[in-house]
Length: 321
Image: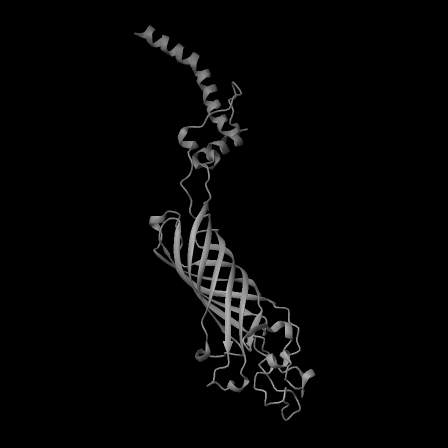
């Protein structure tokens, strides 16, 4: 019996150095990815090489929307004169985290306004309509975090947003059955650019219909930096005071009070009559339905060095060296 045990002990002592080499080789392959004995690349275990589940957080989405648009300015400064027009948008968004995403889009928006017959400015008799184009970039913050797993998301998720944008505007008016671009006629003697910066901000909420589709409702206010979206801001063009409007298209578009009144009447101070209020810029707001559709999802692989236990082993090996 003693002879048998001595024989097994000798075998173990002979194999011990070999086992030590194999153990060090097993650790070293996590550092270099190659065998220290053969120099060949090591193959990871199948479980280590599998992909992460689809991550719907870092996703690129196609966004589209449409709804109503309303203007506030010199031709409408209260709720009783608001006219409802339409807008449509198309863009793209990217989710940065569970709560934050960014969006860029282009929008067509129609705005219009007029002096109502029962309003204090009915005698001014001005009106406009504009097909405008807006481009914006905004940041969105979700009230509830959007989990990457669909079944763990809130069905309704409210959010708030703000950003910057650019508006291309070109007001028009109808005269004798024909529509004219008012910018071309300098109705107040001002050659404005037809382009303005704006700040869109607002709130909304979305419904999680499927892992890839969201439907929502959004309310957006736009602060602009121009008073000429409606072509009305200050006074009649003083260069044409006292001139006849007969046959003069520019004067007819500028002064719509009627042919019986001389163009650009002066008030008691000798200043031309005002058409609008230059101290307040125009603005507009939209109410729209939105559709988000995921078109690309970020997929990542497991990194062998990202596993906590393996990271500790690698760190200890580097320390011993």
